Image (tube, rainbow, N blue to C red; front, side):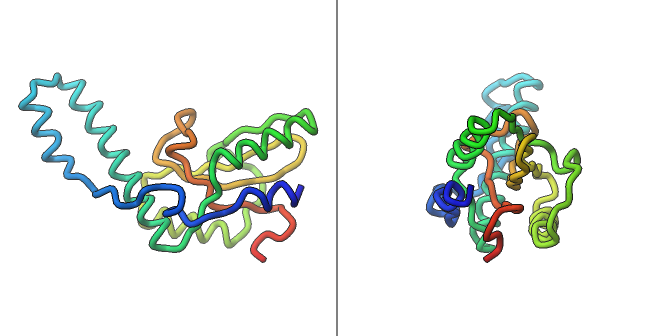
Length: 164
């Protein structure tokens, strides 16, 4: 299992995501939407989308500025699929609040540090029914909307070599 994990290659976020995206002014954009004649429901939907994009940009900057590297989402998913294939089990992302197992104190500190700066992000833990192999992910989207483009896998535990 450790050989698979070492190939996941935790990397600085800047190597995976373009970080020069400016934080946009949602008020300017929304006033343009009003002038364009968008309906109230379209404006609400647009505001939610812009708020998430803004928070995602802030999250990217926060992770980068605080030296929190990420595992590429696609590699984590492929790793979990290999485990599933080998053991016949299932894996999924569950909300931090729905996770019923112990979480290392270091991981809780990471969660707290992010939550303090970005209170509206969501945390997920991978759950594998046959062989616990948790990863921690953070996203601005609720389940089931998390994808490889809006989710950052930032921690793991119950692995040989964790925090070495």
